[in-house]
Image 1 (cartoon, rainbow, N blue to C red):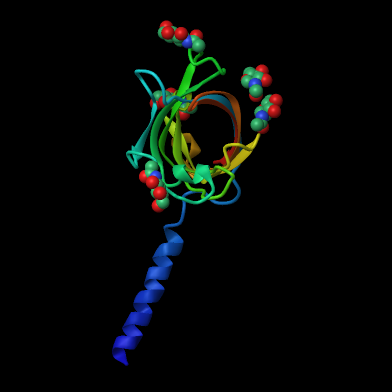
Image 2 (image 1 turned 120 degrees about the vertical axis):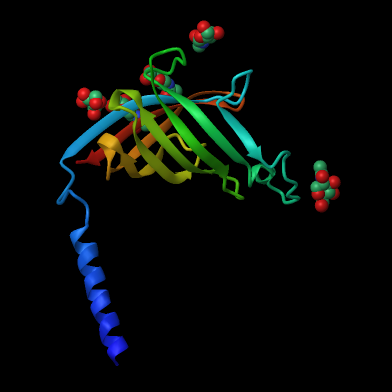
Length: 180
Ligand SMILES: *[C@@H]1O[C@H](CO)[C@@H](O)[C@H](O)[C@H]1NC(C)=O
Ligand SMILES: *[C@@H]1O[C@H](CO)[C@@H](O)[C@H](O)[C@H]1NC(C)=O
Ligand SMILES: *[C@@H]1O[C@H](CO)[C@@H](O)[C@H](O)[C@H]1NC(C)=O
Ligand SMILES: *[C@@H]1O[C@H](CO)[C@@H](O)[C@H](O)[C@H]1NC(C)=O
Ligand SMILES: *[C@@H]1O[C@H](CO)[C@@H](O)[C@H](O)[C@H]1NC(C)=O
């Protein structure tokens, strides 16, 4: 009985600590930042910025869908973000992380786990986790959080492929961030 009481007290104390140590900010985010940039997902050449790390060769799904051979492929990227579709235009940041081919169906889709960092915001970053049906003209990704200027950010991105060459792609991003 005594044990029950003290654990109840402990729970109440814990609850009080959780409530009082909540985020230093309250209420709705007051700032909106909109960013527009281009990501260069480069697999070719002597200095690729995206590499397949698994598996080392295409899988053999003997189903009727040739795209399924890509299923399970995992890539690591450290892609340039620039101000225009030209890879030699102003470097504004990098997109670093992992993406995987996560579709078995005919519609090729990736699962993205990327963090986008920006020089002009003192290396503040935001992170995206979401589905990327790469053949769709416009894809939407949720922004799951951020650091620095973008701490506690929520938001969304629209991504649109600007050009492709083999596996290489230049992808335009429009980003809306709500933060404090
Ligand atoms: C793929 O699997 C099928 C059936 O299991 C087999 O006949 C075929 O030889 C395999 N292909 C390769 C490239 O391993
Ligand atoms: C970008 O610059 C590099 C190095 O100067 C050059 O080799 C490349 O052709 C340029 N790319 C474009 C698209 O201008
Ligand atoms: C970046 O850091 C510098 C030096 O700490 C500061 O003066 C500036 O306001 C910061 N910029 C942003 C966008 O936070
Ligand atoms: C991004 O914003 C520009 C300028 O507002 C607009 O022209 C373009 O259609 C937008 N692209 C996407 C994919 O939202
Ligand atoms: C690529 O980006 C440029 C610059 O924003 C734009 O003018 C052009 O329409 C885009 N092309 C495609 C296919 O989205």
